[in-house]
Length: 401
Image 1 (cartoon, rainbow, N blue to C red):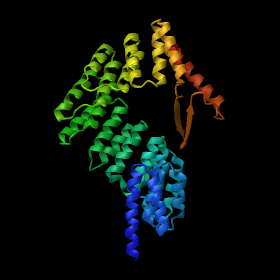
Image 2 (image 1 turned 90 degrees about the vertical axis):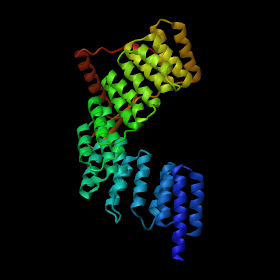
Image 3 (image 1 turned 60 degrees about the horizontal axis):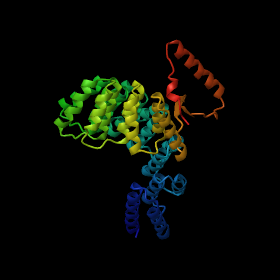
Image 4 (image 1 turned 120 degrees about the vertical axis):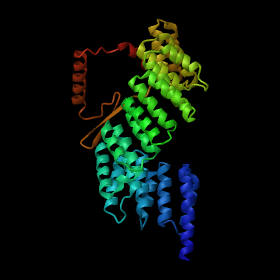
């Protein structure tokens, strides 16, 4: 009888996991009701799958309730709840649950630490991420490829490329994700020569690069302004049988645009074998704004709006471009279209971590109790920038509703 109950629990758990993967809440709830009816809702397999289902559907209250009511919890139960909070950007709760787990009978495993490190990466909690790294070393998980891949990304996004490279080099069994993560780390910081060197090292070690590998190298070239190396990298993709996608084309457009080769970038877009998307036109538009090219910028903005007509930021840029060209009627028409459509730009966000606490800010936010001190520091920084020769471009903010 007990074996039969376990079989049913495994079946329902498997079905719940399938629904969780696609975020299907309603059929998952129906299975929860069935588990309640036949009395297996407390089974550790079923409970763990229910936690995952509710968490992936954004129902953290229900996920926590299932977890708290489980008489027996295993590492999957704990890790599912940690992952649930992490997926919903509630890192503080993830860390709190992780702390409770460490003092329970179920100890964190390699999957737990991979999830925790990834959550710290997304939230900018470097202090907690370093602490998790120390734990992986103590427990021997620092030799697990997926754990190290997460650490490479965490340190890279925190600006610590040397730390990324250190954990990368220490890893014995590197997979393609390891190589791509390290190349991406170099790309984020414009270290194109290092990224290209790593690509050559992959070739020497007979590791076959993929589309993501080349995307990382191309990104590093565009950040470093290496036009010729970027072109060669793009052309070499066919040598590996890799067909460039929109992301690769976007890198080349951005590379040419940043180098001031706007006409070449425009011609490159027009000759693309696949239809350019809004991101590609937006990249050209940003370069035109940077280089002060009004007419190509107007063409880029028009094409972007054809693909994304509700983009408020593009409307603002187009109105300003028309104003710079003294096409006042056109500028007024764009502004009216924005007003009639109720389009508004989203406020910008920023954050900083100080002593393991993250402070978040958004445009026109005055809720911070130390706002006067913050504004004083910002004004001081602006004054210092001006003394160093920085000249604000006030023309870029002509029209921003």
